[in-house]
Length: 196
Image (cartoon, rainbow, N blue to C red; front, side):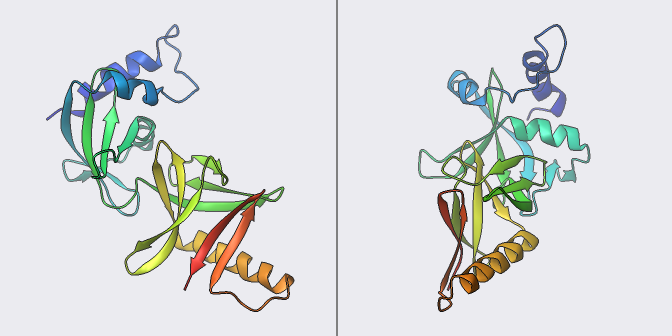
């Protein structure tokens, strides 16, 4: 098993390659995944359903470290089995994820487009690049938002209630009978919020 310092060394080297300055753009994980396929291992990191990160059973309390790990996270479902990896230029290390690695904790409608922010401060605009789909979670259909690289965020209860209320208000404005499927629009992208 690798320790955290061993994982961070190649990442920090890659991210600070420009005269020691930390890069502003996200790491090129989509390129690293092709390089790192030969060497595969595991690390005892776990993300619970609340989006909390743990290492060897204890919480990772440094938010900057969690954000760094999240920036090199990759989801692979190619073999029909959902697997999550931390990807570096040299290797891929499998971790465990209970449901999804992110939780959408905030949402706003700006200029007719909905955006969400995750528990790790990533913000995306809902649309074709960041679609929403309903998935079953603990006996209830809930919306999930694609953040990047097939990494999804389950919406928090607060965001879910906000979307339900917005969809119900929209139905009221349209003077239609209440539908069993509630939808919202983000620009020209229509997405389901709830379904009976």
